[in-house]
Length: 257
Image (spheres, rainbow, N blue to C red):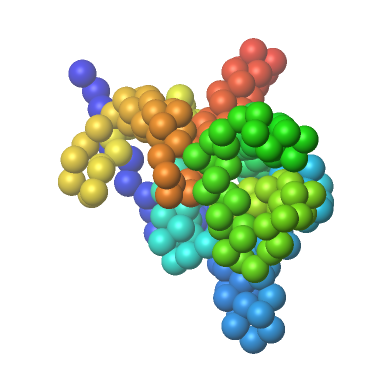
C-alpha cells in the first residue's frame, strides 16, 4: 500500500496566486485594525457580507468579504490552510484555474450562507409581524426574545418594530476566507486522497478521510446552531459543495484535466 506524504514548502517558493492572496488578506486585516483604531471605521462592516435584504448590503461584498477577518486566530488559521493546501493545488492546476476555483468557492460559500440566513430570518420577521398585528396571538420564540433584548440594549427604541425588523435584516454579516479555504480542502482531498495530513503536526490521517470527517463535523455544528456559536458553518459547507461540482465539471469537460 503506497502513501503520499504531503508537507508544505516554504513561503519563498510559493506560487504567485497563493502568495498574493495571502498578502491581500494580510493588508485587509491590517487596514481593518488601523482604520478602526485611528478613525473608528469598521471596515468589516463595510466589506463584510451582509444579508441582501438589509440596508448595508452591496453586491461587491460577495467578493470583498473573503479578504477580511475578525481576529488574529481567524486570519492565521485561514492563511495557514491557504498556504498548506493552495501550494499543492496551484502547482497542480496552474494559476488561472486555481484562482478561478478559489473565487468560485468563496462566492459560492457566500451564496449558501445567504440562503441559510434567509431561511432563519423569515420566521423571525413573520413573528414580528404577528406580534405587531396581534400581540396576544403567539408566544415569542427564544431566538426572537434574545434578538429583541440585544436590540434594546444597544439603545434602540423597543417600541419601533419597523426599526427592529430592519435591524434584524442588517445584523447577519460574515467575513473571512474560510469558505474558499474549505473549498481548497475539498479539492486537496479529491486530487490527493491518499496524501497524509498531520493533525496537530503529529497524528497522520489520509486527506480523503480528513475531508469527510471535517465536512460531517461542520454539518453537525451547523444543524445544532448552538447559542454563542458565531461560525458560519454552512458557508464552509457551501465552499466545499461548489468546489465539488466545479471539479466534477472540469473532469467531465476536459480531457486534459
